Length: 320
Image (cartoon, rainbow, N blue to C red; front, side):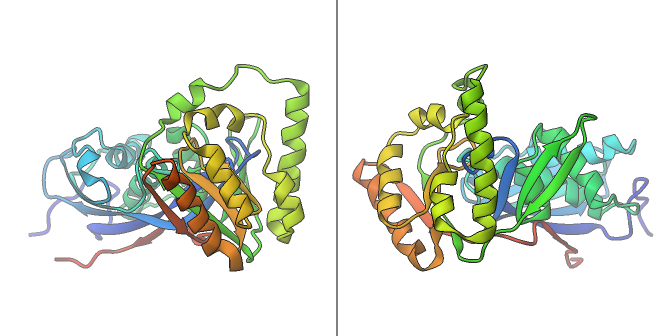
């Protein structure tokens, strides 16, 4: 006997979604610029023959014991939101999550959950939405585009909010000789706390400064010109305020620059720090950043990553 599935579910009863970490803001690109990185969370969805709304969640991997496993789980919330927004009942589902992106560190862990939940639901729908509709859904849940957009579509992305509330996406070319290096400290910084330290207004001079530096950053990323990048990563909107919340910031920044990095910025809301380095010197920059934080008594994981160009990937799971 074939079980009766909720409306708008396809014959496929399972799917797997791999979503990359992201780094947002990248200096002067506050709340509009982000890039996908080669670090991933994976979400596995299996439809259950139970009443609509039933959910079971199993979490494995990095900091798995800190992730909620009831209906408040963000991946499930996004999964359910997909069906609610389409006027459909939410099918019973089992979700298995494999974590490699650290929580609350400025690498887009919440965006991986949102994108994973939406794409998992979309893969199980017999009338799937296109990428543009999924982007709009993800932004509506997250509230701003700089993490969810690159997590979903990959690459480096500039997202511009239009007057009607929709977003225009612009892929930013990223030169092959620019390597992202991250230093992830063993402490958290919530996005809410990072936003609370920001001023309510900015001067005209600060606005002009960031506009000019963002323009130069986009050209520097495209061309790979280190002299432009060394100037372009300056910012007056968020970093001068947020770096006060990150013990050891100055030491790590100085170490990265002295080791050959073009510049260093706060990744997302922090506390992870992102350096952009020439490919041949990335390993030295990585080690210098780790040493600098460790010299301050701070545990840290430093990694040489790469730009993830494909974005989130969906694949069917083999039926058990």
